[in-house]
Image (cartoon, rainbow, N blue to C red; front, side):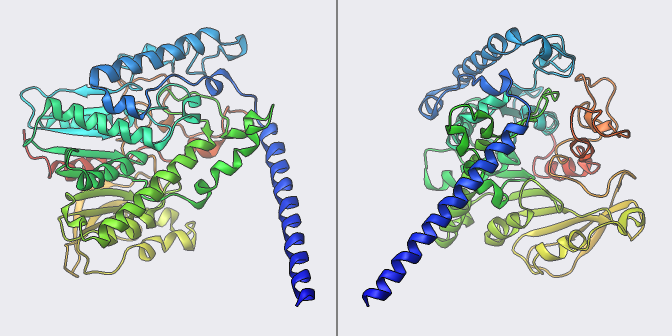
Length: 487
């Protein structure tokens, strides 16, 4: 027995040594990888002041706007006014002379906003943007709500809309506190019983669902009457779970760059290109907490108290998990009038032969067979080889599918939608494929069709070629409008 115990101890010790050597090797590899990248710039190292959770829970809208102004001033004095000569270039949004600097625009959509309807509000919509994003991403949906007589309130999430460094010191709990503040502010302007809608894009979709679930457990929180989700972050990739480990070398002196997964030029006026490891970790913490809460309330039979959920999701999504929208949320929803709208791939004959078998089979893998307790709609080609699209819908509790033409076509350039495309019409001045000439933001990212030699552009071709606008945006607004009514 002693020999066996001694042998086991030696094996454990050898295993621990092996794991230690492996950990050191991975740490060294991560340090080498991070040091190969470009140097940190002021927009990576400056962290603008943001209220903590307690302060956010005490604040009203005026106090929040004052705090937001302080954060913007910190960017001006700590970054814009201290740029080195090599950073004072047109392609840097933080350079005062850059055409992409938000101070040049009629409205800085990095800031929180309130859009008032022409008359007395018929309801209120709270709009929650996504990770690395800004309130800009939901401005078109907000304007639609305003045109239908709703007050539309969009809040800038802490750490966003300023500099990427703001995301190195933020936690998902801060975003939830900001969500509660926005809902309080909306209800202060548009009291119950007038309707309240929560609209969330990407990370904001997780926050919208989380607030609705929290309101089931906390009677002090206002309840929404409807939830609208665009590319919601119900689940993320497994890499996000371990993003915090990638930043561990940053704890060592002189290895600060390891805290970043991407260090890229900042030419987009309303979205960060650089991405810190903490942002990935917080997205995983939020989505895992949300999934656990859904599971708990489902087991308690309380999800029937949720308002109807209308979700728009691209089958092809490299940012969030489309299957998680089904498995973690919709498969646990009761029959409460919810609907899932999925945008399939473009199965036109021009691209069909180039689509990978795994991508081609995505829709069949993720959508469970009917009957389902919620309505399912798939936006797909009318026929193979046709650019025209139709809506194939199956009502809740039924098995028969009906098809309705929607009067919209796939652009010849698109083989699918993407995570970032859904909130933007083709005419969006920044992200649209066919931008409105009057909608100017210094650059037209969605209209670029880059062709040329490698190494010429500031960023990789892959990022510029990702679809950033939605040809089916009018259909999406029409569906949202069915739950709003006419003004």
